[in-house]
Length: 353
Image 1 (cartoon, rainbow, N blue to C red):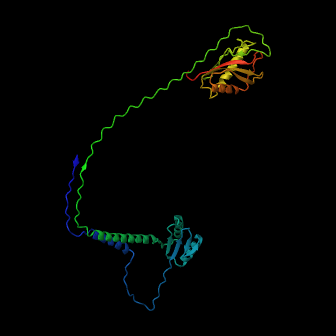
Image 2 (cartoon, rainbow, N blue to C red; image 1 turned 30 degrees about the vertical axis):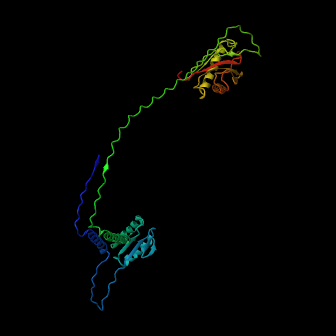
Image 3 (spheres, rainbow, N blue to C red; image 1 turned 90 degrees about the vertical axis):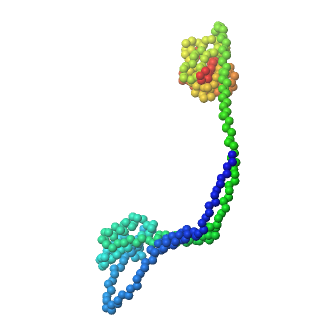
């Protein structure tokens, strides 16, 4: 689709453009207003002369000046507040109605000026005046004059550049014909995001049950060649995901001499091992099953922990042995009827398994 815009040519009337002249007149008027306050007109008057007239002496004006540092000057002499009060009292005794002018720098502290004015009030001086600085006014006048000069100069330059082309007819350039592009095609439908793949469930191999030993007659143990004793006590509940179970261990099915006493100590020892493993961050989330031999000294000190049958995971085996060695010494000493090493079956389960 194409379109064509037509523009008509507007004729300009010949004449003088008075806008620059009005601008110049306004600038001159502003300059006149700003400079009229700086000059005070006067009238020259010839006064009559008297031969024997006595001129009345006017009271001398006292000028109090405060500099930016807060220093007070009386007639250009630095004084303290006490000296200023004494001199003003002396002057008031001779001339009660002498005028006082207070001059303060623009950067002086307001409290210092108030202190001087309070002193003049206490002395009951009636003719007190403040003399403002004229520096700001002079700066304002200077800035206004500079801006006015720049405005006049710019107006003159503009007039010289455009006075010849003000009444010249300028041809209107016809815009080119533009062809509108076709509308864009509709966007493709959004692709359906791929469904997330479900990770395969990790299968934990179930521990193989140990072969139950056949009951046999208990041989008489010798001090140097004693069979290991298995721990047939269940683990105590500790709020964790581990269980310490008994195993055959290949030894005898009993717990040695003492019977009930050895079984009670076996449960106690199983509870200690359960707590030691549940406190170890490396072991408490692993699945394993292993057998260990444990040696305890008569005073309850853990002498040795030896791996009999591993779980197949060397890292888990090392972590379990390290956790058991952290037991150190148990509080309850083993009974004298319990022979060592004691073989213990330890099985760990994953949370939720």
